[in-house]
Every structure is written in structure tokens, then in C-alpha cells.
View 1: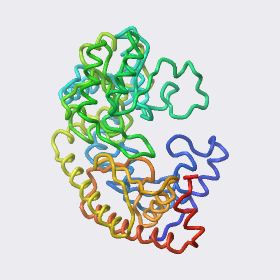
View 2: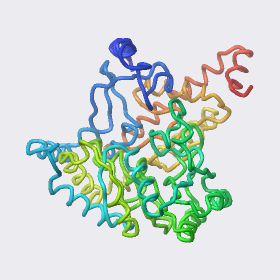
View 3: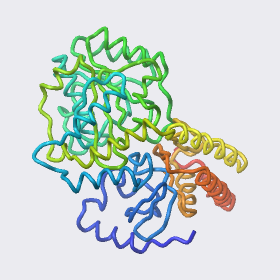
View 4: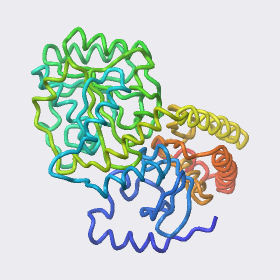
Length: 425
């Protein structure tokens, strides 16, 4: 497609003058190819329009919040109805109780709920609750796992001091011996073991949790009196209608939720069992907008759709259709494409691509054909996608593999060696 980016460039220039770095967080300048838009105008269903009006099939789904489609009519109607009656009030509405009842009725381990706004809020409350319950300090968590952007867990060290990150011991995800060693090192000061629904670290292949690892995490927490926390912020309700570790026969004590629970309206949640109820009641947590009623109305409608529709089965089938089609087309073009993670949350990485040069090139080619994919972060499917959308993405992928192949073929021998080996030296 013919893309323009003049409006986006103008906004970038203006942002550079008034926003540190021109952009921050997961959309920071330089984390994506330079031709990727920084600014967007609107979304509808499975599609996204940038500030210049270019339209994309969006496999990032706003980094996860879009589960049923942008501007979903029923969810947004529930939001607007409540907004007209009242949203940020002196206290919550009855919707807070209804939402807590709905969640505890859906998630097996959950006996109570606390509502907040960001994933970092929910994971930090989980840690605080665990420390209040156990009266201990140490958290054991996997190396490379992302649990938010507050000082105790941010992946970037700037502005963080040693005490912000103290009382943490790290283990290798899915490595039972490594987990046991970390718990042993914590001794009688272990407050919590944190785990992700699956290994979804950036820049590397994803992997599902093994039953042995999940069961061992539960066993170690039971043995030591620590609390097991599953961080569902990214994956919640995309893998299961219950906590994702329910599929492994393991129930956590606490779980943190966010992103898609209100289909793009700002809400995150800490769920917990009765064991941790008194501790959760004892900590002081709050926020000016944590009781917003309109967002809770949107969440109730989202949960209804989770319970009553076949969204999960449909996106699972679409994810498999995408995976099979990409494997066939990559192989035909002579590329090794590793597709890891659940089909509904895929990550694409090329073989022999240590500095992601192939991945960035291929992703840019996909973008030029109206498909927004990410070169190093897991992606998401949403229930607004159709088989026709997936087939269109596969057509774009085939053309993009061809364009990448031509770029490699047309390099001089020296340039080709640099392209294929960049980053290895």
C-alpha cells in the first residue's frame, strides 16, 4: 500500500521538544524500525489507523488490551451508559461489588478482588500482600520476566537504587533445580514465588510452563508458607477462561490481571484466595481513579462475552491458521522462522539473526503491506479478526519474505556477510 508519514514525522518533531526522548516506555524511539508510526488516530475491530490515515491489521492489539476488537459496540455502550450516570465519584458504585462477584465466580482460586489501573499496580500489590501475610521480605522470580515498570521490577536500571531491588532472588523459568536453589537461598525469609503464565520474555523464544515446574512452585510455597503469585496481566483470558495455570492443575494464592479485562478501558486487578484475605485487607493501596465506574461497566460486559461466546476457540483456531501458513511460506522462501509462544500470543524470530536485522526488515515489509507485526515482542490475536484477515496477512507475509530474500540476494558478498553475521562479533 502507499503510505504517507508526514503527520507522524511532524508529531515526532513536536514531541521531541516537550516529551523526554520524544517517547517513553514500550513505544520509545528506536525500539521499532524507523518507518513504524509513533502516533495513531483510531481503531476499529482488528484494524488500526495511524496519524496519517494508514490502515493496518493490528497484531499488537494495543500490546494486549484489545481482546474483542477496538471500539466494540456492546462494551463501549456499557461504558458510555455508566459514564452518563457517573464515573469518578467520591466512592465506588455497586458495579465494583458486581465485578468482584463475577471474577470470583470465574477464576477458581479467587475468593476476593481488589481493583486498580495498571499491571504494575496489581503485581506490586501482590508482592505487598505476600509480605504482609508472611511477614517476610524475599521474592523469588524468573530471570528476564517482566512484572511491570516500578523500581522493584523495571527492566531498566536508570534512577533505580540497590535498595529498590533488594530482597529478590532469581531463577531460570521452567528449571526446577534452579527454582529449588533460589527458594533454599531465601530460607525462612521467603515471602512469594512469582511466575508468568508462560515464558514471554522479549527478544527470545517463548516457552510453555512444564507441569513439573508449576507443581514444584506450588509445592515449595506450601512447604515454606510463601504465597504463589501468577502474573496474568499479559495473558489473562487469552489462554483460558480461568487462571492459565488451572490448565496445569495448579492454583496460585494470588494472581494479577490487566490489559484485556475491560477490552481497552483502564483496569487491573489483584485476585486472591482466603489464605491471603486478611493480609490484603491490612495493606494501604489506593488511587484517585481506581473506583471509576464506567471502566467497571465495560469490564462486566467484557466478562460476559468471555463467558458466553466462543472467542477463545475462534482466536485459537486463527492462531493455528496463521502459524501453519507462516511456516509454509517461510520455508518456501528459504527462511527459518521460529514461531514460539501460544498461537494466540505468537512471537516471530528468524534463524541466524543475532541483531534482528532480518526481523526488522521483514516487519517493515509487512507494515508497508498493511500488517502491523512486532520484530521482538510477543503479539496478540483478537476476536474481531477473521479468516480473511489471517489469509490477507499470509499473502503479505509471502510478499515480505520475497522482498527480504531479494534484499539479501542483491547484496555484495561483503555486504551479505555483514548482513548475516552482524551482531555475532
